Every structure is written in C-alpha cells, then in structure tokens.
Amino acid sequence: MVVMTDVQKHFGDHHVLKDISLSIAAREVVVVVGPSGSGKSTLCRCINRLETITSGSILVDGTALPTEGKALATLRSEVGMVFQSFNLFAHRSILDNVTLAPIQVRKESKKVAEAHALELLDRVGIADKADSFPAQLSGGQQQRAAIARALAMRPKVMLFDEPTSALDPEMVTEVLDVMISLAAEGMTMVVVTHEMGFARRAADRVVFMDDGRIVEQNTPAEFFDHPESERAKAFLSKIL
Ligand code: ADP
Ligand code: MG
Image (cartoon, rainbow, N blue to C red; front, side, top):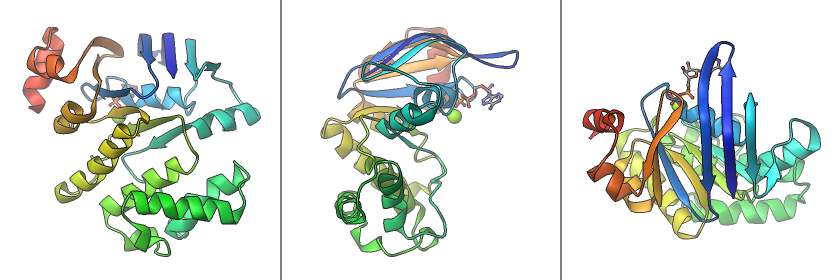
C-alpha cells in the first residue's frame, strides 16, 4: 500500500530522512517509535505530501506521489492524517467538520456526506455531538472527531502522529480503542506513538527511528523484549 524507496529529505543543510526504504502492506499496522527529532513526523508528512522529498520515491497504492494540482488533492484524500493537535475548524459544528472535505474535494452531495459522517461519528462513539462545536467537546472527543473527519475521505491509509500525546491520561484509552478497532477492521495504518500497550496489541511491526534512519524493525514482542541495537535499548530504557 505504501512503498518508500531510498527516500532522502533535507531541510536546508539538515539531512532529516536518510535512506528510508519502507514497504507497508495493505491491512498492516506499523508503529513508528524513536527519540524526539528522529524524523517520525517528517516521515508521515512526506507520505501524504505535506512535505516534498529531496530524492527517492514514495508510492501509495502503486501510484507515485504527484507534486501538485488535482492529482495531489486526490492522493491526499487517499491518505488520512490525524495530528497531535486535533486541528478541527473551531467555528464549524462537528458534523460540518466531517462533511466539508467530502463535499468540497470528493464532490459528494450534502445528503450522502452527512449520512456517512453520522455513521462515522457513531463508530467513534460521539454521534450525539454532531451539532456541537469543537470547544464543547473533551480532548478525547475532539480527537475522535478528527479521526471521523479523516475517515470521511475513505482513505486507503491512515497516518497518526502522536494522536494521544496532547490528551489528559483518562482520555487516551478512548482514542486508542477507536484505533484498535480500525486496525481490527483492516485499515492500513502508520502510527507514531509512545503508547507501548497499543503497539503490543495492535501493531504488526514496530519501526525504530533514530537520527533520520530506520535503525531496526521487528514484531512488537521481539522489539520490546529483545531490542537489537544499542540505540533502541537506550531509547526503551528511557520510556518503559
Ligand atoms: P520527530 O517527529 O521524530 O520528533 P521531526 O520529523 O519533527 O522529528 O523532525 C526531524 C528533524 O527535522 C528535527 O531535527 C527537526 O528540527 C527538523 N525539522 C522538522 N520540520 C522542519 C522544518 N519545517 N524546517 C526545518 N527543520 C525541520
Ligand atoms: Mg513528531
């Protein structure tokens, strides 16, 4: 579903992604971990083209990443992204937040978009919040609304960049539970998170990054219980 080959990314002189080759199968759940500044967010942002890559290639479902124009909008709609900060439109209802892109980008009728949105809000457990505004929701509810909004574009891949890092602890589980059910339904997912319980339960593979490189990757059980590199061992000793 996603094939990255020899991807390099520079910000000016700063070499941020180094020789990244990573293939993610359809229905696979990949958790990306690593120290702050190791390039995890940049990796996600390159997959959905919020950032351009310096060299290499990224294919999503067999299609190379376009640089601009209509093809880019289509590609973006195939890759859903959920951020640490929920980024909901503050002055729009939750229902509007979920239907805006399907109506504007996918050209869905309001009726079709709203029916789908209500289905998705129900799926993430906040159907009763459709007419509320973001500020009226808890952080956990806002993040679930953001997940519904991403799903409304019927993405082939979902990227999550530290989706629970900004949440109060008691709200983390309600968001992770939604992600666990998405994974169980077969969504292809890339998840940057330090939630090791989630990784052990939902991930097919853990990818460990350090200093712009993929240093090692393994099943969650092998990675957490028997990390191979010194860098992974040092990282795990700090977070576990
Ligand atoms: P992580 O998500 O693992 O913490 P990031 O991908 O955010 O890491 O950042 C990787 C490196 O790239 C960091 O050194 C960061 O300072 C740098 N970086 C990220 N975004 C930009 C940007 N827009 N301009 C310049 N440097 C950036
Ligand atoms: Mg980050």
